[in-house]
Length: 352
Picture (cartoon, rainbow, N blue to C red):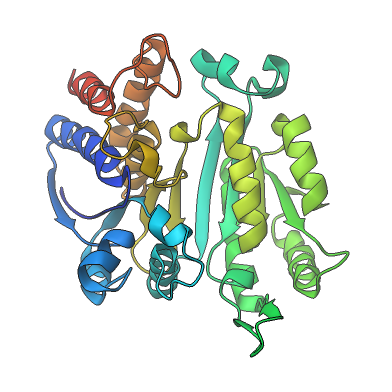
């Protein structure tokens, strides 16, 4: 099988971690007799520096022509520290989501037995936790009208959702629940927000179509609290854009490291696979960043193309690397491996 993969390494540690994921994909391709063609493209601060646009049209065309996109991270302190900057790396991410129709972010949160002691939560709380957060990506406050008054003393960000946007993300969340433990939690703020009331109204109307799914509803503040107290209570959580941003990041610390969790952004056109963490500019070029989340994102990429055995091979190699203690410094200070060393070890394990 020939795989055409767009590669958007991005900023900070992005190029380093994406390179390790490519090693894993290459090892799988050799083992299962696939041909992989990578097409690199600019995104984020790097793209701004080179062409003045965080998501250039050429990058979009490459994404559209690819079977899937492997994405690193975006962000640069020089933009973070300049509140008046008119063009920002994050605008490229939002543009990519909008133009590719990436309406859903899928974040599996799984604990690793060999790393349970790294979690900030007690062993009995986190052991066996296994959930998926489904976040709506193209609507809500991040994409609503926003601005400042002429005298700059007032600002606004509008939160807008349509019935169609809510229905399609809920359908996806129900489908994930059907494949898992058949439990779905709809997270909203229906006691305050009109958009949340629309979410709840539509979810309740859809419930009869999924009689085998146990559905419950939770205000976002309560969900955030219970996620830390009883993470094993949840199977699939679905929510709007901003709430999903917060909930999914909160869920990620259950594992003990942001460097362990992958994600997929799926929708109308090409899907994008990326680690959940940011660009970590302080570590850029030092060969110390954890590549596991990106490597597991590559497994999700292969799975999306129905290459299930290939995805399994990557996950098994990652699990063995963690059990063997082949980890970066965020996991172990005593015996830390370099980013590239972890990538090499996993690729060698895949190859057998």
